[in-house]
Structures are given as structure tokens and as C-alpha cells.
Length: 282
Length: 272
Image (cartoon, rainbow over all chains, first blue to last red; front, side):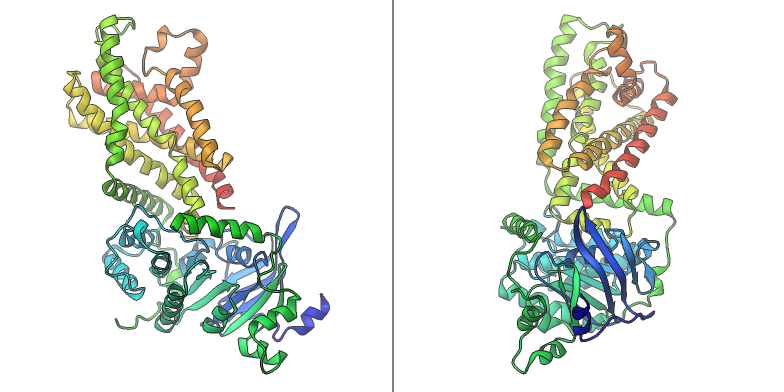
């Protein structure tokens, strides 16, 4: 364990002004330790990538950050707010897109986004305009009044980005944003995320196990494995530390001793849920 | 598209609504979503209307002729109509938990749970959204009953009170369904349990026959069944049969509140 910490390119230092400050976070499911004493700092305005294979503890970490699971041990602060005691205030600042493609197919795209605008208390006089604005950002204006059940996987993901943006979040949390999407849909989602960050200057925190996604979207990454943090830094720092031709995939192999695609404990559950989503969305 | 500046962080942190206002706002939101879903797919309104119509036309007309059930001076069909309204509301609500399991499987519940919506407000919203569905059903049954010549009240205030009673009843039974959903977590099991308890709830109430013709043990059960109070209030409002309104309303409101608390407490299990 100690040598792993020494190998970190950058250690997490407490920063009161950080967008996300995680200290000593541990989360268990029964006997299984999903997240083990994790320290993490995301600075404001960063594009932060949480990398690791299935079962590394990425999703669990996100679910503690977005107040879905109360922290069992350690502390998590979002823009200085404690997720344990100020959960409602934290939620107002968050936009969240879960791993699974999840929209209400029996409503139109516009109704799906308006639903979330209401749940985030967007004032009535601004609501229609705000909904139209985020639908335009994700290029769904033309399809907005069609039932979302008729959307393709890429359109569903873009609609979810619109839902997550409608409250103008300070922190956008994306859990495996492009898993199960074809390359064209994936590029489109990446472009939208970059566009939104330029536009709003928000902090983006995403998990992925696609190294190219981390390379394209993130200016800061950490590698997670078996619930612990193995390395952190900019993608270039991590690659350069290994040699001139190293890829992020090589970095991953170096720090974990495993390939990204190897099945991990808990990995099968993720695979099943992804397959279920894929079959549901056709 | 011009660039939109991000609002200062303190705008997110400030609680803009008091909890009662927020609860009301969430209930309205979920009811609106339910209405939008109904507008996009009206077929359910029609298919759901078939069963109550059969109860009224076949069961009601037949038992009116047989005169097997003592209902005093009231024709049996008139006596039955409020019972069928309560029954059709029960049948819709008792399977409402399937929706929350579907939303859980589809990942929607996770997203709802990370909006600034307390779990009790989310459950209350869903409970009253179930009520919206049953209101549509109630109107269909009222029209059919009127066509069959049932002597219903046309006092608009009483009809409004009928809708309130139906919504309160549905809020309880949909929360019962969401509570079971939180316990069993799977659609198939909820379907099975829903089917197992619907008929006992229906028969152990005054929906089809007066409580005083029941054996003592069944009478005791029916007094613990919120459906009995729902039917009593509906019968009082629609055909003028004597009932203790304050007791009916207190039981229905208390049952709905207890149901919301129980379902909200188990919602966390669905989020895992």
C-alpha cells in the first residue's frame, strides 16, 4: 500500500475552495469493500476523470458524491458543503447522468426535461425558455416533441445531458457517459460535454474505462483499482512518467498490473446492467 | 445561442422553498407527469373501464334481480356503484408500485433521488399521481352508472368530495404497493403479492355487501380496512346513505400519511 502512495504523481491536499473534497472515504457492501480510504480533490472548473475497470469503485464513489449513498466513513464536501448534513443544498448544485440510459419513454423529450426543471424549482417564468435552451445545446430541438421512447441511444444520452443541465449545475457528474454508444454518438456526446463546459465554466467529474475518453475530455485523471486510488495527475503527466510512447492504457497496466478489460469482482453485475439497458433501448 | 454565465454558487445553496411549499410543488409535478403520460396513451383509460362496467352491468343487474343482499330501500345497483368506484381505484393503485420498480430498473429513480426532493415528497408525489389515474377512472364509472339509471347526486360539491375521497384512498393503496415494492424489489413478486391481497381487501370491505351481514370475524377485519371507510364515504356522498364523515376522512388521511411514511422509509432499499 505504502509504495502505491509514493508512486502517486500528485497527492490530494486539502483545499477549502475545491469543487470536490473527499477525505478518507470508505464504503462497504456487506463484506465487500467497494471504496477503501479514498482521498480525492477536484479543483473548480476542472474536467476530472475517474478511471478504472468495472468494479474499481468508481460508481460507488459517484453515488456518495451525489448524495445517493450517505458516506459510511470519511467526509465528502462539494463546494465546501457536507454531503451528509447539507444534502439538499448539494443536490441543487449537481447535474447527474447515470451509467444506465434512463429517460421516461412515455413522455416527449421536452416533457422529460421540463419534469426535471420543476424538480429543481426552476422558476415558472424561466422554465420554458431554460428547457428550450438546453434542448438546443444538445441539438434535440427538432425531436423535442417526439416521445423519448422513439429516440436512439445517442439521442437519449443527449437528452439526459439536457436534463442534467437544466438547473445550471456547478458540478456535472457523468457516470460512464458513452458506454454502449456507437462511435458517432460517442463523439457527439463528447462534443456536447466540451461545449457545455466552455459555455458554463462548470466542473465536470466523469468515470470511464475508455482511455481515449479520458484523453479527450479530462485535464486531470485518477486511476482507481479495487476501491483505492493508484495514481493521479494530468493525462500527459501520467503518460510521460512511463516513457515517451506510453498510452493511458499502459499507465493503467503499470499501476494495476491488469488490463482494463479483465473482469473484476462486481464487474459482471455492471455487464449485466449494461446489457439490460442495451436490450431495453433496442 | 449566446453563452450563458453560470449563476453564483450561493444561488444553489440557498433554500428557496419551505418544506410544505416544496411538498406541494412536487405533488403537482408528479400529477402533471401522470396526466402527460395519460394524454400520450389513452388506451389504458379504455381497457381499465371494462372491468368496472362488467361489475355494474352483469353483477349489479343480476343481484338487483335476485335481491339476495339486504340493502334496505336502496336498489342494489345504486348500492353497488360507489363500491365499484372504490374497487376500480383499488385495482389501479395496488399495482402502482410496479411503476417505481420499473423506474428503478430503468435508472430513473436514481436520478429522481438526487434532485432536491426529499423521499417523503417523492413518495407523496407518486401517491397523488396514482390518484390522478383513478380520478379518470371514477369519472368513467360515474357516467356508466348514470347511464344505467343509478340515482346519483349531481351536487358539484359532493362530486368534488367524491374525487377527494378516491384520491385519498388511492394514495394509501399506492403507498401500500410502493411499500411492498421496497420490500420485494422485483416486479414479478409485487404482481403476485398484489394479486394475492387485492381480492381479500375487496371482499373484506363493504364494497359488495353491508358490514352487518358479515360473520363477526370478517366484520372485525373490515373495520381495519381503509377500503370500508372509502366506500362508506362514497356511498354517503353519492346516494345519501348515513355515515360518519369525520371518521371516514380521519381514517383515510391517517392511512395515506402512514402509507407515505412507510413507503418513504423503504425507498432507500430501491435506490441501492
